[in-house]
Amino acid sequence: MTDKLIFRFVAAVSVFVFVVVVVLNRHLIPAPAVVPSFVQYLPKLNAILNGTCSILLLISLYFILHGNIKVHKRLNIFTFCLSSLFLVSYILFHYLKPETIYGDLNGDGVLTDVERAAASPVRSIYLVILTSHIILAATVLPLILLSFYRGLQMQVEKHKQLVRWTFPIWLYVTITGVIVYLMISPYYHF
Image (tube, rainbow, N blue to C red; front, side):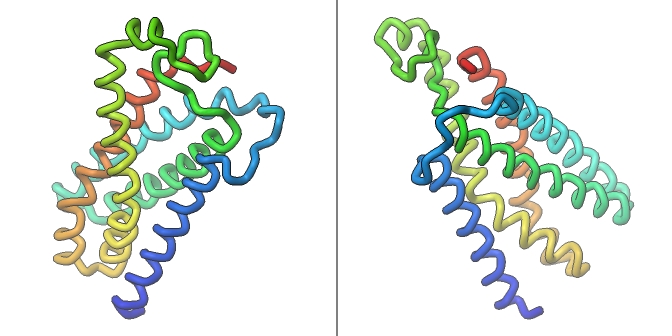
């Protein structure tokens, strides 16, 4: 495959995933009237997947720093699969469940002045973490895909150049995914 074709493929996959997330998250396709019972388990599953990916990324770094390319590659493929599973679970949850608002104690979908006051200033910290998490999560996918391609093709120098950006962003996204879950979980109402 040529680089041009790979870039087009990565761009197409990245745009497709972004559009799917937006369409389902914004409920442009109506969700079922009744939320399936399994949905309540998805946020915890997502946090477990993100936490596992964080650990696997760090272990993968250890192995590549010690020259074990085979284990590094296997760990990254497994991490990519778990991240893909996370993405499906994330999309499904946000499609099936109305948005959870940080500080909404009674779960009515409205943040009253009293609830806002009770949640401050932690709510502001939560929103900063969430915003950075969302922006970086949206931008890391093409970097991951290109890094994988370069790594699997053993284009070591190009792979190294990409992972200087990909690794810390991917790690940040997986870690903040767990933090976001821990912060928002008291406000889930099923």
